[in-house]
Image 1 (tube, rainbow, N blue to C red):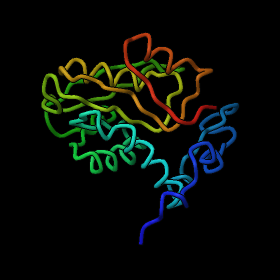
Image 2 (cartoon, rainbow, N blue to C red):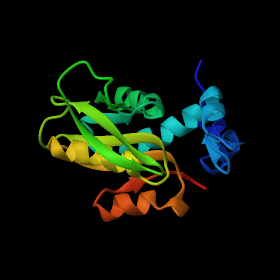
Image 3 (cartoon, helix red, strand yellow):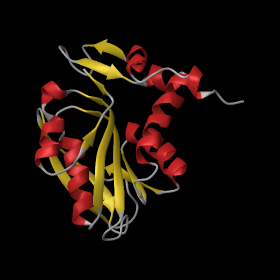
Length: 183
């Protein structure tokens, strides 16, 4: 049995399914947790339908999902769009030859990797993660895709935290950004 589109929540009302967890992962941070949104079938369907409608005619050939929550939405979108899925993993998690990109954290650095054969030059790729904060992870993933020759159609997330500047950094680097919820 499927839900009719009329019974699905509208995008702005999806905010009620995002909880803020205080002081996680460290004191003073209010973590935006999408778990309730994923758990509610109607809310998750509404979110997925939003992206499917947005990208249906964009010629997306691959969806690249960032480890780990980007895998959830990314795999659903790849399936719905008839595209392949590419995991962008934390360093050291891929079994085949890979390339990496480091990015700055508040205290130190981290890195993500992709297989060297993950994309072919010119392929239209949608980059997906759950949230854009400082933009470090998303920008590193977009740069990895570019290094492999991909055409990054858009950097998509469920939530944008514009006060932290990540979406502005992505746009300044030439990557279009889409996130239906902002805090």
